[in-house]
Amino acid sequence: MSYNQGFSDIKTVIDDIHNHDSVLIYRDVGGIGDAAMITGAVTGIRRGLGKDIRIIVATIPYCSPVFYNNPDVNWLIDSTQFDRVHYDGAIDYGSGKDICKGIFESNGSMFFGLSHPCPSALYESQNEPNIQRSRQDLFSEACGVKFKVGDCAIYPTQEELLIAKKAIPFDKYTVFHVKSNAKSRDLPKYHVDNLARLLSKHTNLVLLSHDWKYRLYKYKNIVRVVRTPLREIIAIIANSEMLVGVDSMGVHLAGSLRVPVFGLFGTVNPRMRLGGYPNATWYSGYHRCKRQPCWYHPCIFGFCMRSISMKDVMESIMWFKRTWNLIKSVEDYNGNDK
Picture 1 (cartoon, helix red, strand yellow):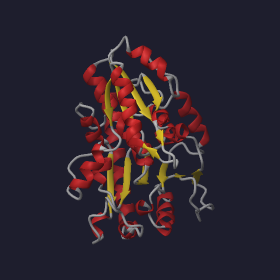
Picture 2 (cartoon, rainbow, N blue to C red):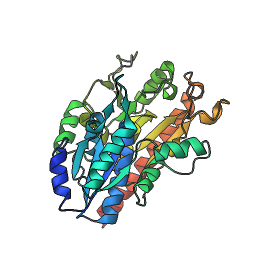
Picture 3 (tube, helix red, strand yellow):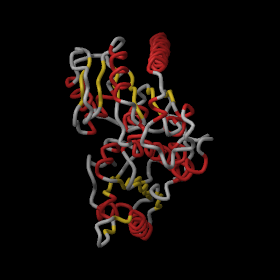
Picture 4 (cartoon, rainbow, N blue to C red):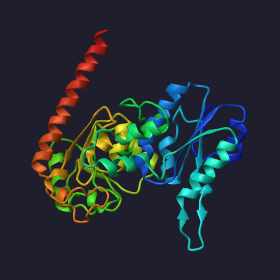
């Protein structure tokens, strides 16, 4: 069974699980990157419980496209329908999770809540800077399954890939995701411009961000992706050779698409974010700043991001790109030689 690309009616879902064993994964807060990391738990549940189990994902609307076309997801439901809105307009996310849990457990479904208290946030706040495990691993463990590196998966359709290919004027290109939703995770503007200029000497470049001002319009091999629907962004990344990005959705979409990822990190330990992807590496400014630990209360000044040397980053990116291309060449040769 597969679901259409959108939310399903809760009554339809409940009617279905009355006749089948089911598991519901609930995540109503966080970002698109969190949704991508949760796909690893979906893969693990399917592997552990088999094809007959119904897997339901409850999430917020702007994260839902991450789960479209996923063969391991049977139903997708809107988690906001369970929110309890207070008189002042604030939403109590905890009560929304409790309401959803009560409804589905009373109808015979197993429930896993990955919102507050978030298992990965608890681990990170208690163990930083000595991080040994990835968020992907922790999300899967919270759902009672064993995580394997590479479990996270996003599935663009062939039609989406073709449309994205026509939208970008290059056959081969690197995506540079330049901006996070948190100021402390961003590179300074002059770093972004310098790195984009340096990258463009070695590769065609697609700049991914909707509200950044660039000085590089004169470069013919640099294009911008502005205010593009999420499924189109996913397909653009899927068609790319590599993604370079700050701690935001881009690195997680690429990692879940098995596109090589080079992450630029500061206040957050990159092993926590990227350790679950099979083809990811990173450059971190974390230990260059004395204001530690800072994950739980990150500063707004971005000292660690400002301390990163663009020359060092560029050398690391090119080493990673050459290494990855060599690995692919060997794999292709071995495959053709059989």
